[in-house]
Each structure stands twice: as structure tokens, then as C-alpha cells.
Image (cartoon, rainbow, N blue to C red; front, side):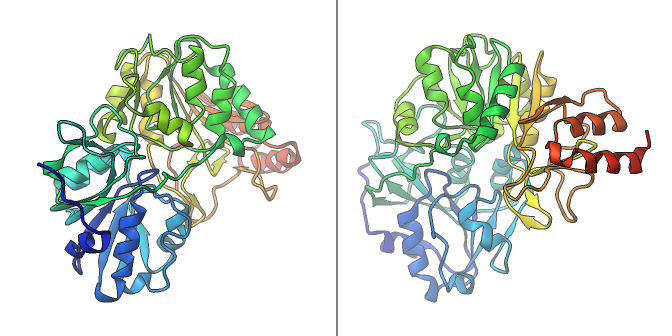
Amino acid sequence: MEPVYQPAAEAVKAIKSGHRVFVHGSAATPRQLLYALFDRGPELKDVELVSITTIGDHLFDRPDFGDSFFMNSMFVSQPVRKLVNGPHGDYIPVFLSEIPQFFEKGILPLDVALIHVSPPDAHGFCSLGTSVDIARSAVKHAGHVIAQVNPRMPRTLGDGFIHVREIDAFVTSDDPLPEVSYASQVTDVARAIGRHCAALIEDRSCLQMGIGAIPDAVLSALHHHKDLGIHTEMFSDGVVPLVEKGVITNKYKAKHRGKILTGFVIGTRKTYDFVHDNPQVVFAEMDYVNDTRVIRANPRAVAINSAIEVDITGQVCADSIGTYQYSGVGGQMDFMRGAALSDGGKPIIALPSTTKQGRSKIVPFLQKGADVVTTRAHVRYVVTEHGVADLYGKNLRQRARALMEIAHPDHREWLDKEIFERFGR
């Protein structure tokens, strides 16, 4: 079957008022299809968009958005943050590992899926490219699939192949993929956090790193380690030089030995070129990548994730600033628990000790309305630029003291008073 290509405006006519539409995410955000869909806004009503991370400046900044569309997001990224905190959107708290079940079990039945793929190969298979994550499940269960086909999309190996027979409409595209350089965002504080995390990581460990500058700072501090592995929901540019240098070999993984396992990538063209047709990298769906049973099977699994604030008992808020929804639950708990159960594993929460405005991120109590993503029973290591607090086996008083010691020096006297008020000496 040879694909028949049509204009984006024609392809999105399949979307009707009241439809629920899946939007492919991260570097695979199908911007051309979205722009064409939004142009149809005046003739549509109550179209629900579901997604995880989307990328694209001003992508959803349409003055008429709420008249026609509603963003129901399962992870909040910058382009949709304003929407989900307003009347024209909302957020679904969910572990990343469980999202495919929403589509498979009919909890969120999909009328249409908008995806972004590589051109079909000689056998008629396109690749979901940079984001297999929850997209493979969405394609399986959507009633109608519209694909933006782009030669710039890498052909990635693993579970992300889709035959042209699974696609109902094809639209050509030659748009550059969005690029994000987390390395350029690394500060001196992030570098110090990276060094503390690196000191906790043993040779032959299997790493998961969340999104942002701190993971890249950790990776840049690992150049003298040996035989590291990667089993992660996502990775970025920082992994590539460690593979090229032979630091990341994946030799000692129990699952997918010799290979990096991931659900998606976000980075610069360097990362997209690295994963293109690369047998070292396996892309899989999130219900597998983030399955705690799969994660814990790897010895010395290390999970490094960040937070917005941590209270003095170890409760971690990672997705909201008070009641303001900033990001999402994502895969943090999937990997924190998986690493904790791994033989020799280490779950790590890494964060700067203060906000950009100088407010302490280690606090007596989480802000009113703040969400607990990782409970104090799940936390072990908390790392700031001032050191490492190991909370495992510690009572509440001991935890509070350990966390105070890695808070910013300007806030330790205040925390000391709060600890005394709560626990006494």
C-alpha cells in the first residue's frame, strides 16, 4: 500500500465536535496538524485534546482556544501550563506507567490520534521516532489515525513501528524537530548537585534520569565511571558522549543487556541523530519501561529525579507550586520504587536548595495545596548543592536534622527553630 498524501487542512476534517483527540508529544509534537486543527476552531465545539509533554512556543496561544477545544493533559509542560490552570484545561494525576491502560481499557477512549512519524521503509513501516512512550498504545486504540510524515524524524528501533495500514491519513512535512539543550541550562549549583549524585553512583549501575539540567549535570560528572547502563523513561544529549567514551556499555543490565532502554528522547539534533537506526537504543511503551517489576530486575538501579520542594519529614512535591499545576506525577514514583527494590539500587531526589528568588526548597511544611508525588516512606537520598541526606531508617526528628544540614545556610537557623517547635530537642 502506497500512502496517499493530502494537505493537513483536509486530513483534520476527520475531527468532529465532541471528539477526544490524542496528541503525540515531546519532540514528536505534530505542530503542522495542530495548526490545521486550530484553524478549524470556529466550526468545532468541545474537542478534547489529551497528551503528555508537548513542545512548541505559543503552540496553544489561540484567543479562541476555549471556545472550541479543551486540553486534558496527563503531564504539564510549558506550552499547556496556562491552559490547565485555567477554565480551558485540566490535569489528570497518573503514573506514566499506567497511561496506556487509559486507552486500552476504554477509560479515555480515543476518536482520533495525531502522530508524527518517519517515512515508511521498504516494508511499509513508519517509526514513532523520538516518542514511543504512550503513543503506540494511542495508535492501537484510536478510531482514526492521522500521521505527519517527516524525513527529519529519526527511525528508532524497538516497539515504535507502525505499518501504513494502521494509518488513515498522511500529511507530508519537512519541519525541523524542536530542540532543547539542557546542557546550556546547567548552573554552578546544578554542577555541584551533579557531583554529589555522581559520588553515590557505583560502577555498573543502571541509571534513570528525569528531565532538565540536573540530569545533564549528573551525566557530565560520570566520565570516570565504568560500565554504566541506562534504563530510563527519557534521555537527552548528556548520554551521547558517555556512550562514545565507553562509560555507558549496558554490559551488566539484567534487562536488555548491551542496550539503552527508553520511552522517548528530548534534546538537540545530536541526540536525534544518535538514536536514528541505532541498534544500541531500544524504544518501548511506558507500561513496560516504567514497570516497577522490570526496573527492579536490573541490579544497582539508580533513579535521579527532581522536586519543587521537600518538607522536613521527606515528603516530596514534584508537580505543583501550591495549587498551581506546574508539571505532573510522570514516572518519578515508578522509578523511585523500582530503584528502591533493586539489588543495590538507590532512589535519589536532587534539587537546588533554593528557588531563583532565594526561597528555601527544604521547608517545614509543603505549601498549601501542594501535591505529594513521592511519599516520605519512599524517599531515601535527598541531594542539594550542599550535600546528601540519607533518610532511610531515620525517624522524623533525624530526617529533619539531616535535611536541615543540606539546606541553604541562610535558611538553616529558621529551619532549626521550626524543627525545635515541632519536635523539641
